Image 1 (cartoon, rainbow, N blue to C red):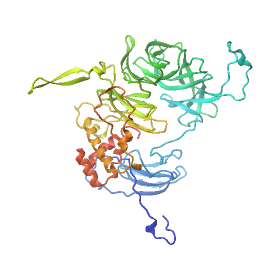
Image 2: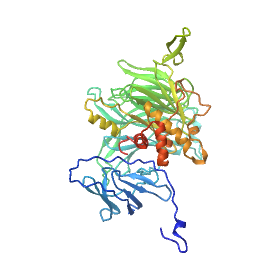
Image 3: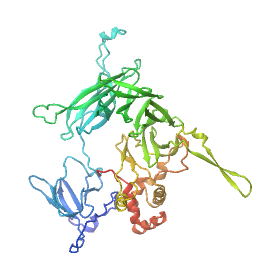
Image 4: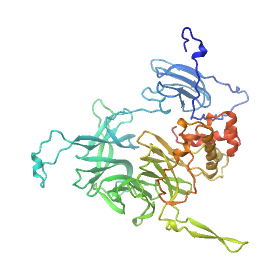
Length: 588
């Protein structure tokens, strides 16, 4: 900072305390001999130009950069790999404005931060690819490592001139034509991020869903292949019925164009099925035989790909109005359908014989935009988001029992265990809790399997006879406002302790405009329970409040940790690092 003339330096220097939601990684223990050097305390390193950023590097067991743009707060970006012992800027012809560093194993690396990505705005590496059209759906094709993007492009609408019932349309001339969307499927190369192939749909046909599925392509050899399934809707007006199509594409290898080696792949049409009644709104894999579950109109139908290019139906389930999402718990046959007006349906699919059975559904009318599974050990929960910004947690439990206390006399009491009549033997889903997301209502989700935590991995290594830890899962939620969020289950002990910390932080920290964060997550009064109420008054643990635990002073952190049942603030920090942010999501 340059000192202006005539002003004291102390009058122009200000400090502002900013929250940090990134937790440092624990140091990696390595084998050392007796002659090893003592641990050195490495200072921070100021770098004036690292790929255009003026940054500060934090060496040590958790190497990180402190980045800031002109329109963002400072963000901490971690460096993958082992701890760093030394670092210095490195600028040569082959590595412009890069850096060189040495890790704890003595390996030196010359590195350059990609200049086409942004880091300081969101805290993660983000690269924006311009497609030029409105994107409806995206699917990744693993064998070719390419992306298939479904777009809808507005184009002028013209009345059909060969209509036998309206021959006057052939003479009609309009100077100002209305616009209707037309679907277009694009294939993107992941190395150059350019469109290498595209397929246009029929006029007035829009793309609603694009999924990458593993389907059986041969009835004799049972060969399976990763294919792209596309669901569309063709609507020409209010007086004509809506029709749909199911397209199945393969990403085939072809001879590239001269001078464009990236154009070595094309979309090849494998199958096309005409749906005479209703649009194809959702597609998913189902079962273990390489079949697909298609939401078409007011039915959900299981179809198999035949060698002649047709899709053979084998089982179906009647729905109500409009299916917004279809999900299957991979390899189990447990399916979840969400309706735009009639809530959530939990069904099962069997292959011998081919049949779909309704297990349970929500009890009230619910405008569901998206639904997904959330397994937690032996428990299976259902996450449903509605049009009012609420997320409902439901559960299928046909063995739920109602405990009644019956007094026999003044000295004895007995408990009667009876089936809960409200659940109708499991036909109505149990409602666990409901919370509000505000304007960030999720419209798409994906179930992710989390990587094991370092604590569980260490326990498995030290105790060879121990049973393998149960797989942990989380639901990644995405909203049209650009917000990504995760929802994950907690154990009973973790829930009680973290909920206690949340309540104490709510009373200890100031909030923007004096708003109450607890009231923000509370469901509105007009939102009724979508199932049999079994939540016992519980609410969620808000990660946005927990990540502010580090804003407290040392004494206050120790006081709150002790009240919540922790031995030290370090134990709280270790538990927060295992559940907040991108914890357990591999790449991050």
